[in-house]
Amino acid sequence: MENKPCLDEPGEYPPAIRVLTGQLAADRGSAGIVLVGSASRGQNDKHSDYDLQLISDDAVFSLLKTEELLETRELPACRVEIQRTSTGDFLSLKRSPRDCDHWPYQSARILYDRDGMVSREIELIRAMAPELQASRLRLHLFEFYFYANRMQALVDRKDRLNLLLVSGQIAQSAAALALVSRGKWPPLLHWSAQELRGEQKGALALAVENMLNSPGPERVEALKLALLEDLCADGHEELLTDVSGMARVSSPYFRSVRESFGRL
Image (cartoon, rainbow, N blue to C red; front, side, top):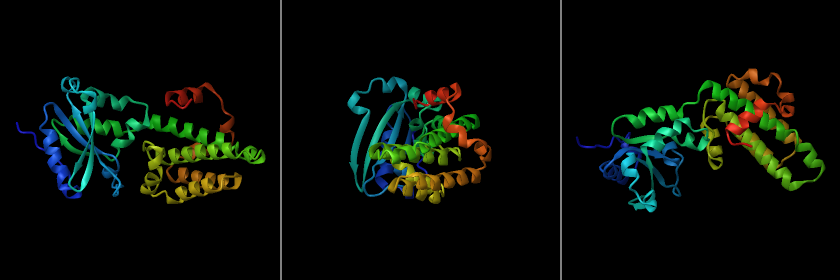
């Protein structure tokens, strides 16, 4: 049977992407080709690559040389980065606790799928189980309050560097909360603003930016209010019953959750 690309909505991509997809699909052992990165989310600009992931059968992948695992090609009107991975490694992603193994697939576009495996697996990789979402929400809310409650002491000590570092932690926790509250995997940090705005959370993004521009207790309180309103809007009112005491919690529960996500 001839391998044919199943490029979705081809008009969105440069013609060179369709040609390259056909060439890669014809490679021995190609099981699937997935567009990830900024182009898959519609966030690419003139500085962006087209990031393709080529999934190969394990036997074929094992024969590849190190320099073949990541390749950059200059094509007409675009630059493409091709990352090769094995079917076995791809199948393991749905069990990974790391956000970076899930977030890229939330908006991934399947360009070629030999037997339907890639489509099935990406649905599992994208999914966030309700119990996992609940744990993550409590974890990030704990982190947010833990750092927010230390802001005044850092201002009083005139500890500028730690004030900036803690502000970054507060902002990161707020961004993670805003996305997990909708069952989304948090992005790599340098894509957080685009993800927040894409989820129509511009008011919260502005509160985060204001706090980072002028860190201090007043800006943190404004961010806290915006965050709590956002959580309520997403239907998580039950989280807010005892938030004032969360920063003082040091139970084994929080330690185990933090460890499971590599946050200790």
